Every structure is written in structure tokens, then in C-alpha cells.
Image 1 (tube, rainbow, N blue to C red):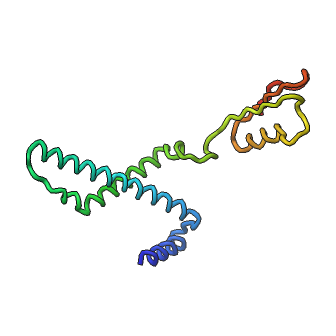
Image 2 (image 1 turned 135 degrees about the vertical axis):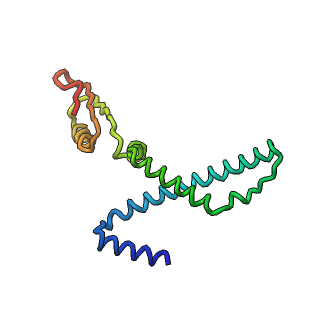
Image 3 (image 1 turned 180 degrees about the vertical axis):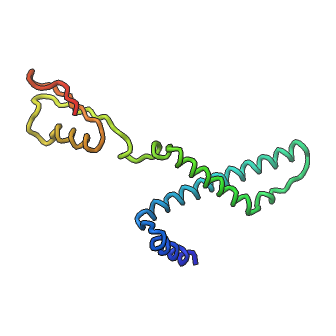
Length: 155
């Protein structure tokens, strides 16, 4: 049933609203982030509810049942909390800064070359530095060699 309605929604979204099918994976990941945040809020809300009930019982002597936490509205409100938090987090721009995507981080790489520079060998420091620079990183070559070669070269 859920698969059928999802397939119909995907088809209608692509045809009527001209949504790209390639962005469906990104939307699915966003949905998983939202559900994950809602699950965390649900756990925290359950724990907070149990602590409040235990404190009320200890301080006042009144008996409050834990069954009140079993209401389905707690799950719905927790998912709503998670949705708002996930959208707020995405809208603030923090998500792009905190993701552990290697291409999102800029590295500064120092390439140290000893002996004769440039030299014939397996490693070509300038080619390595240029490829790192093209990828958006900062590359610096440090060399010690003859007096006519550069000691510091920033690419």
C-alpha cells in the first residue's frame, strides 16, 4: 500500500510538478534526518516525562500513571519537534559546515621535497600540488636542493 502510493506520488511529482527524479535521493535523506531527529525528541520526551512523574510521586505522594506517556499524540508532537528542528538546522547553514564530507573541507598541504628538485622519480610534486589546487585545496612545496631552486613555492 505504502509502496503504491509512493510510486504514484513519484510519477505525479515528476509529470505534473516537473520535479527531477535525481533529487529524490536527497529528499529521502532529508526525510531520514527528520525522522531521526523526531526519534531523538521522542526518547527525550519519554525520559523527561518519566522523570517528571517520578518527581511528582516523590515530592507530593500523588500517584501518576506512566500510561499517560503511551498516548500517540506524544509521538506525533515529537516528530513535529524533530521536523522543525531539522528544517531549522538546514536553514541556518550549519549543516553544510558540520557534515563530514571530505570535499567540503579545505586542506592546506605542505609537500616537502629533499635532494634535487625537480627530480625524476615516482612522485611529481608539482603535478600533485596542481591537482590539489584544482580540487580547492591549498598546496605549498617546500624544497631543499641546489641554490638556484626555489625554497618555497605556493601554488
